[in-house]
Image 1 (cartoon, rainbow, N blue to C red):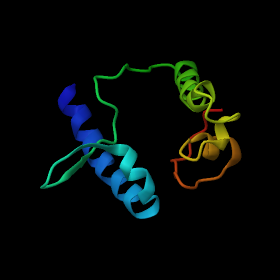
Image 2 (tube, rainbow, N blue to C red; image 1 turned 180 degrees about the horizontal axis):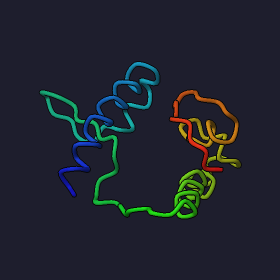
Image 3 (tube, rainbow, N blue to C red; image 1 turned 60 degrees about the horizontal axis):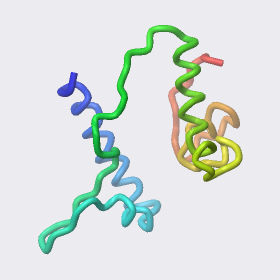
Image 4 (cartoon, rainbow, N blue to C red; image 1 turned 90 degrees about the horizontal axis):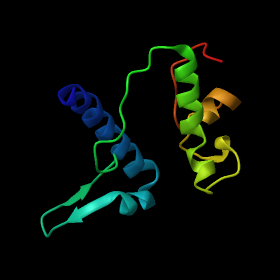
Length: 108
């Protein structure tokens, strides 16, 4: 499973970091995890194993998406999930695909 996750996460993180580097360079300093005289290393994913699980039912998927959308609200960063710039809630709730474009699915 770790090989599969690495195959998914590594290319995505390269694309995400490149997007951040070109569109929001000020954020890059927050993603730097180490620096040497030779190069800087940036981490897109949080350190650690995370909590990965398989989701088999549509209700579990909806609950998981809603949980993720509400993370910035619970953290006190915004009042509504759609206010968080990097949330897919902007796409699902408002139909606003920027800055993250999603594949359209009928979940809700």
